[in-house]
Image (cartoon, rainbow, N blue to C red; front, side, top):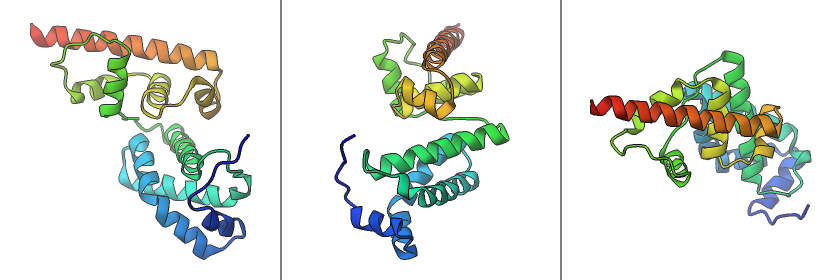
Length: 185
């Protein structure tokens, strides 16, 4: 793969030499964004902070494996997402991850759902999905992962990822239609 130019390459190089000052600089550059990623998955500030801290520790331990094939932030984000999913699996926490990006993506998929359905209503319906559908929907719709990436993160096949996405979308779409129908009558 081709090497990408990194904005913070000197700091990354120092981190590879185990420089704690550089690690702190890199942490300060990325901690807010990585906290938001973790929080989007675990929905608890304290758990998100723990997940983020653990992800940074893992990143610094494995920084030698970072080969500039992708932006450092993308590499780190993948670690945070994996750490978040591991935390969800470990504690069987509820995953709530919806925002305007999901709704926009859902609209692109030509979902004909009444416009009177609120974001809260969509969140409620997603909360009712089985975890396997919630995770795949979140990674695909919100994070923009493709099926190969989802299969690696969740340790499932690409076919399983596609199946979970299609079934999850179908269940969500039906639930939203039933909600909009019930709301009108």
